[in-house]
Image 1 (cartoon, rainbow, N blue to C red):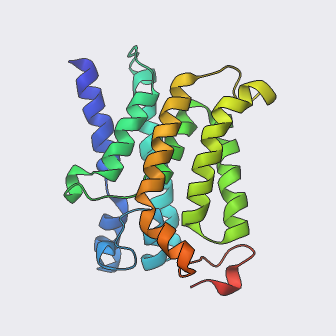
Image 2 (cartoon, helix red, strand yellow):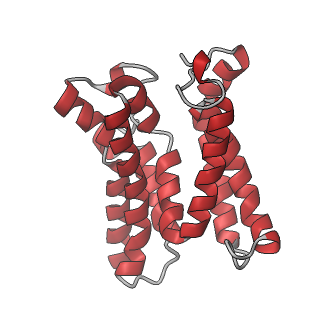
Length: 210
């Protein structure tokens, strides 16, 4: 029963829709009615601006971090990654938002931060590098998801300081989460192919940002 309760807490943490709540409380806007209609960090940046977008990014990461840390804090003998997955599911299918949420990139990053801070820094670096190259959050998220999944297999061999041993559960979950992230970005993929995907004012293509 204790495990079930904490899984539920992790899911509820993930379900907190900070972008929607901040938009309604401080800007009298429901971000679900603007931009991509998404409730996550990217659409918050797009609709509300840099400051609220940064706050939501921090909170979305924090959700994954807190959820993953629950079994560590309360001495629950289950791999903490599973609690991170519960938060990711909550973020993507939030009970507070009629099960229509974000794409789980930031919350997945938060899970990595709690599980392995060095691997989080490594993964975040990959994302920032490709964001600088492409100026597209969606494409950077997709590429990063794939490379991070491959890294869970290769790093224990070529760079064990970050991942000292092969963690097949991490690889399995990274594969599943990456597949899910790509699926959630299917509309973005169509726009990327058509050359109509939104860009942000950062990186090599910032002058072309929409």
